Amino acid sequence: MDTSVFLSVKDVSKQYGQVTVLDKFTADFHRGEVHALVGENGAGKSTICKAIAGAIRPTSGTFVVDGKALSGWTPQEAKKAGVSMVYQEFNLIPEMPVYENLFVGKEIHKSLFVDKKAMIAESRRIFAEMGVSINAHAKLKTLSVAYCQLVEIAKALLDNSKLLILDEPTATLTNNEVGILFNVLGKLKDSGISLIYISHRLEEIFTLCDTITVLRDGLLIKTMPVPETTIEQLIHMMIGREMSQEFPPRVESGMPRDEPSPLRVEGVTNKKLKNISFTLKKGEILGLAGLVGAGRTETVRAVFGADKIDAGKIFVKGKEVRFRSPSDAIREGLALIPEDRKRDGLMLILSIMHNISVVVIKNLSVFTIVSGTKEKEITERSRQLLAIKAASMTNLARSLSGGNQQKIVLAKWLASDADIFIFDEPTRGIDVGAKKEIYDFLVKLKVEGKSLIVISSEMQEILGLCDRIVVMHEGEVQGELDWKEATQEKILSLASGIT
Image (cartoon, rainbow, N blue to C red; front, side):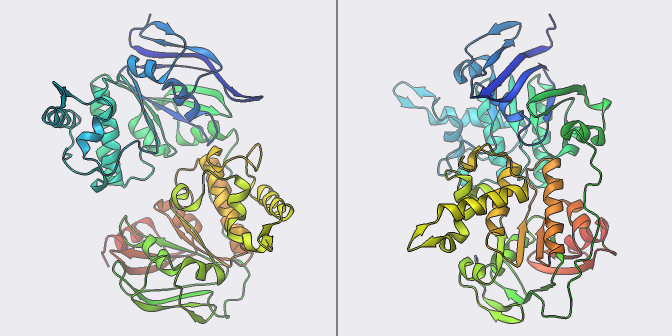
């Protein structure tokens, strides 16, 4: 028996009815190893991780921990064996102090009373072991996303975890925060803890991980050491086809440019923005670039009527407008696809169909009664246009993969027949195959004469998609670049406030 193996997963399958979402998955997870699971959304990564964590019961297969085969795997048994999972959505209480979050349900008692001093001391000890400085007394809501992530990891370590599963831990982190997380994960690895790491950021896999397992459509494709593959080979294994080109070829929309700009922003100012001015032309993709905190999201929220404007003007098709709310912007033909699709773009407890029709529900209604036929027609048209993968459009939105959830948000706004589309981080948390589909669709909108604003923290997206790039720094426009002159160095120089 290989004593370096902490967990062996053997022929684990999961079926929902007649649908197989995971088929005979087999892999070994070694002590002190960072093992990456990669694949497109829906490939089975989260399914196998939830099975390992006991959150779902496999249809078949076995788990072997330290050489001992276990059956009837439950969350309690998984935790007892030393397996913990940190999910994308944190299981934390914002109003409580950090130390109380760490000990919810496992408080330290002294006689009949909760021993706060002991819990605070233990919190400090675990943070010191992780090599991070977090105030145990601080309210959780005052921490950044990155430090909330570290609190979740600390909770797992307090349970004496020997295998830690991390599902997209860097999806919302800045580069500096990613560095802090990687430093902590390195310490855990050195201490002999096994790590299972899920991420769509393939460059992170090659930086952090020792072993990669590729899944596709519920099937295990290959497990290999990181040095034995490349990003290009990995993508090919993930999607089962060659990526002919990551970004679509550049095309002109063919739209006349002498008519009034669909959108013109002049001197927009509020508490977070200072004198923001730019124009958006018909049939173009305008990029908003900048570092985290530059004011990109705040700019589009102000333009869309979601945030108050203290000064400045907005013109739509040459006419000055004053948006008191997003409803006003929608009536003028604007659509905003937000950064956080789960919080701001979707109603996860409603069906896919209801999510798509919600913006145009009045148009589908007669005397407050919604026409089911028209709603189904819009939904089916969206399904075909965006290649939405769902067993039924009456399924809940939360049942979809990240890429398909993003398509639902797109479908909702396409139903509104908007002329100006604002995309805030359109491919965040989406796999490479779905990214290509989103890119193709953005260019399709451009060719049809729609006008697009794209915010992205991925430099290659800005350079590969956009016709012009407005670069922001600390709430101000720092400069503008045409795609022909734009380089990563020029954008970063402007974004850093260097002119």
